[in-house]
Length: 358
Image (tube, rainbow, N blue to C red; front, side, top):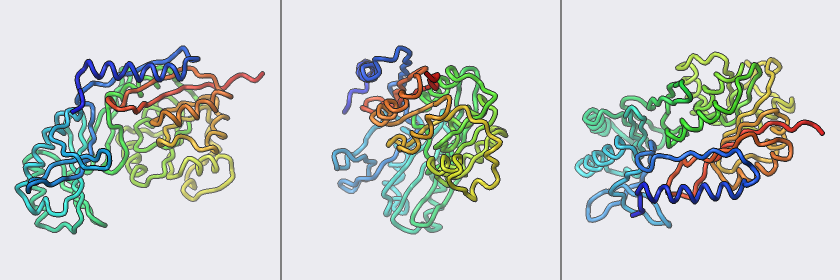
């Protein structure tokens, strides 16, 4: 088993810190954010493995399933649910039959959700057994199979994020991307709010997801235009905006490229018919792309914004994109966020301002 001690985590964090610093040694203003060394994961996915008639949770490593007997990097609520669920699975054939994936999600108030995914149609007998487990563990349970979803309780958990002296709630919906490590998410929100001046102009947010950063941006800028290509995430965003009474956010289901094409009047979209783009005065763009980073067209377009706020989950693509963006913008601040301790993964942040013309 990997060494999950605080001492080892600190050593690994220092290695990441050096790697980040060496890459950006021309930048002086860099912030580094450590994670708790245990209990930091609030989402986890597992497959199943069966040995000698006993079913266990498993994860795949080097192409092979490995039994998971403990998972201390998850928060305590998920750890306890893992144990309870495995006991239930091994004593209940209706629940275990053709079950192939289990997903856990929790919040820092122990609001929790389990999704069970099957290679079979789920009937009333399954629903009765799942209801029994949900009631005994005070947890919501979702059953999924092809073209089927059975919901017992809620299909989200409610998390509360913090920045400076402020907080806001967010519904984190099942099957939508959300931050795995809420402590680091707080650090990201706090870092952005400390380094971005409130503005009477507007901000464009690409890849907005459920609205994790959208709520913060709505409090820093006059108006927000937020776009996202995922239908479930846009549906979740709408509910989160209502939850927070965020009335200055306009949103549409568009990819990043589609959004920029609309702003450049290259294409029109029915999905934007209720939004007058001429009413926006954009000074800033907020970017939180997938791991593959920014495509060439997006890079070409975002250089026209006075301020770029970039959160990245892929270090290699972040380095590539920064090399391009630094041709037109000065780096005001950089940050390294250790979202995934004990891995090589580095989450990055940059705030850039447009260079004055020569």
